[in-house]
Length: 390
Image 1 (tube, rainbow, N blue to C red):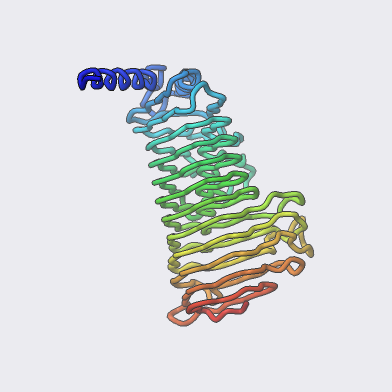
Image 2: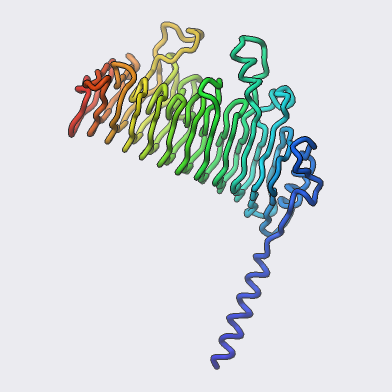
């Protein structure tokens, strides 16, 4: 076969494959969206989604620069393709009146989707007035999560900024194979229930290279989570990275195979925490690795709390049924804001087992911090300060 014929066949193949992979491009402006921050663009975004979801070819939804006002929106599958890219150069803005979306579970919700990627953009949840209502003790709606993915797979969230969510910023629920990278979360340190990223009932979630400043957990891990990888995350202000709370329900799936590494905590309430309700449950947490963490002025750098019971309701006098085992703390350094830097307060019925401390150095006011253990069994290796109470 001649060189020219080979070249012709190669070009023909390239043309054929590229035509098959042609991407449908959809600009929300073309569907009536207005970048003025005051015109309701909800219907325009839904129209663009309907077109993308119905396409048999990969589709890109483009949000240009500007501010786009949206009410709560449900982007639903099943779609005819599994390659929808949402490219956001602008800002999506929630209504100033928190009551408009305050009773919805999510402001922006993706359900039953496969292969959706969100790149860039700012989500402005306008949550400050709702926080003020909650902090005043008045009756208020619970608030909406800014961005929620449920029962979905093969999801990417990259380069997104979430500001002032009413409640949680990002929730991954019932999902498989999710990558969250280069995300920035920002809310006041006294904003209630504004977890940065919450993962539950999901497998194969990766959270990388992100900065989270909020009023609750920077990252929280709920029941039914497995194969979770968290790396290079800066947390503070906030309540730390928490597995739990677990054990709220009697019948509950466990958490396993979680890695948290190369993380920093600055002025947070907790560092790395596992917490469970002080009540009967079938839940568990096992095979957990906390590695390469730097604490700066953290109130509780290392904590397991199995007596979690908000307002002392529905659990006083009960012991946690959640079984915690195979938890490793490796290369954890820094400063504690309280005297007790390591606290293992485990269940008396199901003590924590196989807890490992390896190369831990935590100080309080330039002196070795203290450790407190209750119903915890494990080992230490390398230099460990405070002295182990296991």
